[in-house]
Amino acid sequence: MKATLSSSTIPRRMALLAVLFLHLLVLKADCIPFASPIRTFGGSWVWSFDVSPDGSKLAIGEEAPESGVWRAFASVWDIRSGEQLISVASPDNTTTVEFAPDGSRLLIGASRLIELELSTNLSMEFGVSNEWVKTVRFLPGQDEVFTLSQRQHGGTGRLWDARTGQQLAQHEDLIAVSGDGLLAMRARAHEGVRVIDTVTGETRAVWADVTGRWIEHWNQEIAGAEFGSGNEFVYFVADGLHVLEPQEVLILNVHTGEIAGRYPGYLPLAFSPDGTLMATSVANYSWREDWQCDSECDKVILRRADSGSEVRRFKGALRKDSMGFGVCFALANSIEFSADARYVLTAAGTPTDQANNAIAELWEVESGRLIAAFDRGLRALFVPGGKEVAVLRMGGPVQLFDIRFFLVNLRHAATDDGAEIHWDLGILQFANAPSGPWADLPAASPFRLSTVGGQGFFRVKVNE
Image 1 (tube, rainbow, N blue to C red):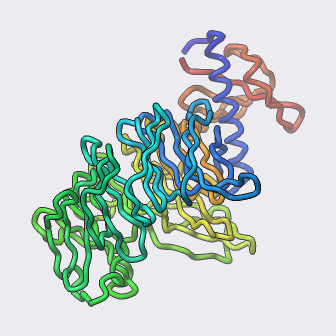
Image 2: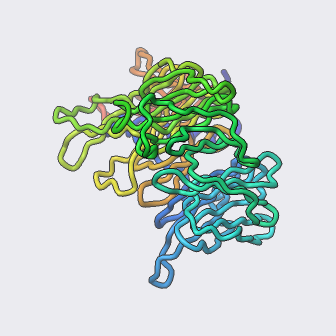
Image 3: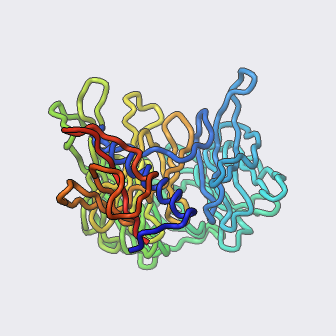
C-alpha cells in the first residue's frame, strides 16, 4: 500500500468514496437499499429500449407530448455523455428497438418495421404487415431479419431481406424464436408442437403430445417457450390452469424429439453464456400483514440447464404497499445473466401496477445474495462491459446505474478507535480527528457525524 496519491487519482477515488458513503446511509435509512442512477434517458413514457453491442449507445422507444399531442418517437443516445444523437418519429407505440449485431443499424418495431442506418440517419420501411412486432432477430450475416408479431395466442413470423425490406417467408402460429433467428417453435391444434427452420419452413422436431393431455385448443395450454443456448433444447411452458398445476417447464431435445426433463416453473427463462445454468421466475404475488424490514420471499430459481435440477434460490425483500402490508411480486418481466455469468439481473412488475411494486434486482450467482435493488424497474439490461445496468422505470425513463458501487465487497472490522469498513479499494474508518497515520486526505473527511462526546470524522486509506 502507498500513502501518497497523484492529484488525478484522488478525485476519482474520492468520488467513489462519496457514493459508497451515501450508499451506506441508504442501507441504514430504508428496508430496501434502492440504488441512485448516474444518468437518465427519455422522460415521458418509454415502452422499449436496447443497448448497442459495444455498450456505447442506448436506443429507446417512447411516447412524449409535442404541441399538446402525444406522439411516438424512437431515439438513440450516447451512454457516456447522455447526449441524444438521433430522434425519429414512429408510426405508433414502439414495442421494440433492436441494434444490429455490428451496431450500425437500428430496427424500430411497431405496427410496421423500420430500419434506421445510424451513420447516415436514413430510414427504410419494411413491407407493411400491420402487426405489432414483439421480437426481432438478425440472422447470421445480418442480411436477413426475422420478426415475430405480438398476439395473445401464437403470432406470425416473417423473414425479411434487411437490405431491401422485402418479405422472404412467412410462418403462422409461432410462440418462440431462437436467439440467432434460425429456428422457431410452432404449436397448432391436432399437430402438437414442432421446431421449424425459419428460412425454409422445414420441420426439425415434433412433439405430438408434450403434456399427455393435449386438447383441441392448444393455445389454452401454452404459456410460452424459449430456446436454450446453442439451440440444443427448447423449453416449453405449459399453462397450469388447463393442463398442469402449477405451470410446468418441459425440456425438449431439438435433435431427438425427446422430452429431456420437466419441472415446475414459469417464464421468462434466461441462460448463462456457456449454456450450463438457467434462471427461471417464481410466480409469487402475495402480501403479509406481519411485514418487517427483514421479510423476504423467493424471486428466482437457479437451475442446471440440461436437467432442470435446482441449484439455489434468490430471495428478495418485500415491498411495503400503501396499506402498510409487505408485498412480494416475483413473476419477472426479464431475467438476464451478465457476460461473465457472475450476476443475474431481474425485473418484475406491470406498467399498470398502481401499488408501485415494480422492482429490478441484481443478484450474485455464486452466493445467491441480493446486491442491489432498483425502484420501479420494469425491465433491465446489462450494458456490455459489465460496469453498468440500464433499467426501464415504470411509467418513466430509462436510467443507468454503475453497479461497481454495489460490488465493493464490504467487510466490517473493529479497531481501538472504533469500527472500520473495508472494501475492495481501501478502508473507510471512523476517527476522532481528520488526520492520522494514513495519508492526510482532507477531501475524504467532509462527513461530520454527531457522536457521544463531540464531532467525529470518516477518513480513508486507498489501496493502490
